[in-house]
Image: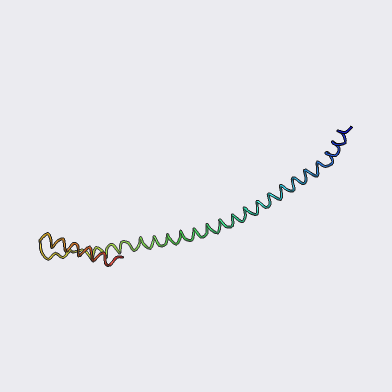
Length: 108
């Protein structure tokens, strides 16, 4: 007899407990979903910034690639001839050093 009363009470309360458990679980899922959406928005904004910086670097790289042959030709023309005053080894060394120093002064 005592067990039947306890069983009736449990059968009466069980649907409410189940409903409460499911409601709390759904609430937890909603808050988790909101947090994930915020993280997604932040990540997308960060991704947009990264893409913009990559595009900027790509444009700079393309500009460098187009200007690089011109710079090489400019350097070749500038230092095409080594002016050697004497045919001695010391004079040749000094002229090469002067050439290297001139190149270092103009390029930081």
